Amino acid sequence: MNQTDSLSLTQTTLTPPPQGESGGEWIWGKPYWDDWTWEKPYWQEAALSPLNDYGMAGDPVPYTVSGDSLVTLMLLVCFVMAVVSAASTRGFLSRQLKLLFRPHAVDTDISETSGEVRFQLFLIFVWCLLMAIVANHYVGYYQGTTLVIDSELLALGIFFAVFVGYQLIYWSAYALVDHVFFTPQQNSQWLKIQLFLNASMGVTLFPAVMIMAYFNLSFEKVVYYYGFVFIFTKTIAFYKSWNIFFRQNGIYLQNFLYFCALEIIPLLSLGAGLMVLIDHLKLNY
Image 1: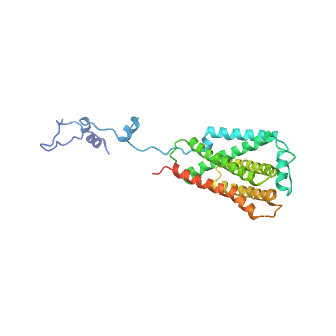
Image 2: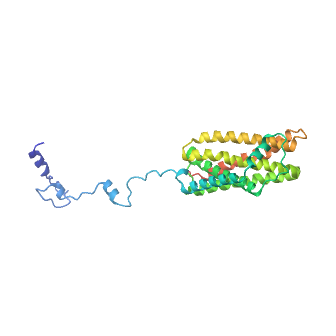
Image 3: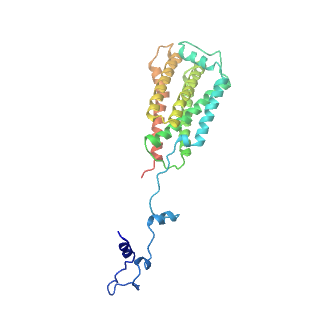
C-alpha cells in the first residue's frame, strides 16, 4: 500500500444518514472517530475494574497434605515422639514378638510399664490420625467428591473423631465381653496381645501414608498394602484368641463367633458409617 492510499484511509468520512434518522449534528470533513465515543473493549474493562462480571473464576488449587503446614507438623511430631518412645522402651518389642509367635508363651509374670502402655496408646492415636488422612484423600481424589465443609482441617477432624469413636466402642465391647466370660488372667494376657497388635497397625500404616502424601504413591497401592497388613494382623489375633480362650476345650466355632462379633461386625459398621457420613457431607449440585 502506497502513501496516497494510506492517507486516503485516514481521511475517510461518514456519509450523512438519511433524513429523519440522524440522532445528532454531523460535522463534515472529519474522521468518524473524532465525533464518536467508543466503548473500551470488555477485556480492558475487566482488567481495570476490580469487580466485574466478565469471565469466570479459575479452578482453585486442590488441597494436598504436603501443602498443609499444620498436618505436616503433626505428622513430624508424631514421628519424633514415636522414635523417642521406641528408644525408651528397649526390650519391649522382642518380648511382644515372643508372645505372638511362640505357641504357648505366657507373660503373666512380667507386667508392662506405664511408659510402654502410653507408647502403645499413642500409636493407636497415630493410627486414627493416619486413617483420617486416608479417608479424606479417598473423598477428595479417588471419589472426586466435594464436601460442603470449606475447611479441609475440619473434614480431617471429623474423620479423626469417627476413628477415635470406633476405637472407644471397640475396646469397650471387648472389655465387657471378656469380663463376663473369661478369667482375669486370660483377659490380662489377651489385652497385652490386642494392644500390641493395634499399635503395630499404626506403625505399619505410617510409612505408606507418608509416601502417598509426599511422593504421590497411588491410593490403590496403599489400600493393597494396608489390606495385607490388616489381614495378617487379624489372622494373628484370631490364632491368639483361640490359644488363650478356647484351646483347652478344643472349640473352634465359639472362637469364630467371638472373633466375628467383636472384630468383623464393628469393622463393617465403621465402613457403613463412613459411607453415610460422606454421603451427608457431599456437595450435591
